[in-house]
Length: 282
Image (cartoon, rainbow, N blue to C red; front, side):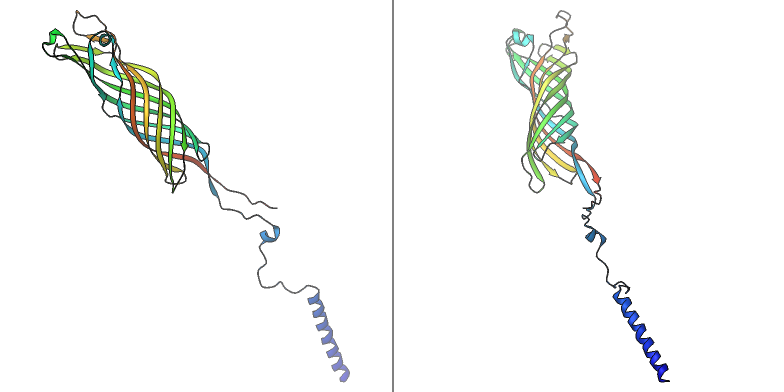
């Protein structure tokens, strides 16, 4: 009986020994805590979220109002006679335009713009002394409408940015197509009446501007500016009259050195796209 008991004890001891050997050989189950992330011990670079990358190109649109004038009214009759220009000027008129630009860096940008400057009513007055007018003076009233297409290549300096506001200055050169329509020369004292054919001419044009921009979002910027614009001379077509004794046609009238103080507001929209950066392994 003792031999049998000894055999059982020896077998249990052998079984426990084998279990201990198995544990020492690495056959224990994995620990219950989570392993380190795969990326950590593989040395992966952290993957950023998709980001919006803004291109340097932008589109712009704007509207505004003009405050225009000229230096002088002239034609061969005025040049050869004793005429005095008393007044001249335009009513305000609207304009609308757009363009495409390129932001070189945080301070320098360029754009090309095209705008239509709506019809502005013109009024001018000259006086002269003539016996046919009695003891007073004769008057000629000049009326008509001017409009333009203006094309400019512009450069800007964005001075600095503070709390999303960027003041800037700029300048541009280009060309203007100046059109004069419905021009009349009326002398009420002598019942004289002349009218001119419509005419358009292309001139050299230039402008200087100053304003500020406010970033509404990463892609949209509000823009407000003052601009001084020179669009050259405007010339009517030949003049005609109801008087059959007068020579037909008569020389055109020129509005010399048309210039304008403009106020404009607009928006600039930057091109942009979403870029996903892939996983990069060391």
